[in-house]
Image (cartoon, rainbow, N blue to C red; front, side):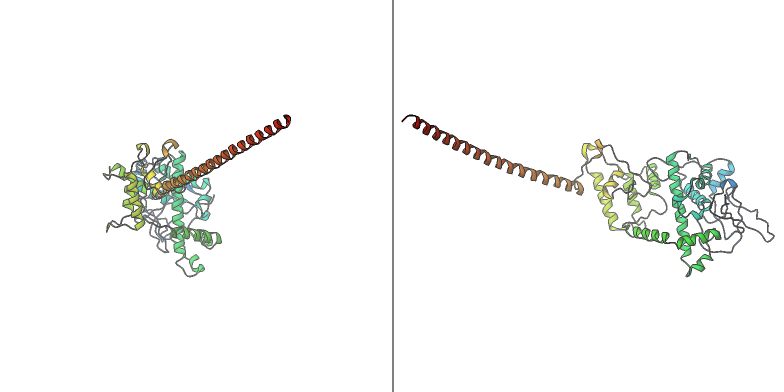
Length: 397
């Protein structure tokens, strides 16, 4: 197994520096930055420790020299590890596809650091990452937080979060790659915390036709985004969790309240887009109107009506909020002004009207046939009477 990215500082005498600040066992450290630094540097002032053998995965090489400062560790994580305890306060429920809870911010930060430092860069796509490559990352996270990755849903949520962080780090690397005027210059200037062999492979990946096609398609999809948000890095799921525990007094479901908060400019109190305001007004109208059997609509059902579900999640609430269909006996609800339902009713009425017209036409035809049949019967009786009279006159001369 090829050792993983290792960042080591050496002093003028060639000895590894022993000074560390807020570091995890086995992970590099620096006292300031909490996010990946993309850029070039020749600084060698931040000490780091080596990554244990049990956390080594395939796909990258060992650095013999630290290139720039490393990444800061969370204080709470470091403190708990020194105390021999894990951090709790991370909630991953079946209703959400994102972690929430009091420790959500620390959890996301640590998950991102672990992914950036331990995931092999030469695989390029998380979906192509083999399970044995992911296991050390899962084990590290599970050793730091009170979560169980043996639970399938929890593991799926964590895997998706790592995929997002991996994709974001690769995006940052590409932004660095595009700073240079030539491919040769870009290859000679890897970002901080990316080893040369990994960087060359990434450059080749950025130059491949496969990546260019995917990048073009992603750009086209992003251009279709009509309404953005002001929620920042905090997920909608976390905002709904915070609104729920704070007992927000607004008379609308928490999903609708979060949509309002995330689509307003806090400085001016104005909507970020007219479509966002239109969506919100429709949501309020749906919430206020009665439904069949007096079964109130949930916040996520309101979103399904206004912004339509996409790929299993509730559009407008981010990827983390999943929607769940009601049982068929209670799923149907009727709301005045619902365009799709009104159109369906109009189509049904047109069909009924057409069928009624056909029935009336058929009844008229039946009446004509009955009249013709009666006239024909009368003609036959008259003819038979004449024949009988003629036969009678012939038999009696």
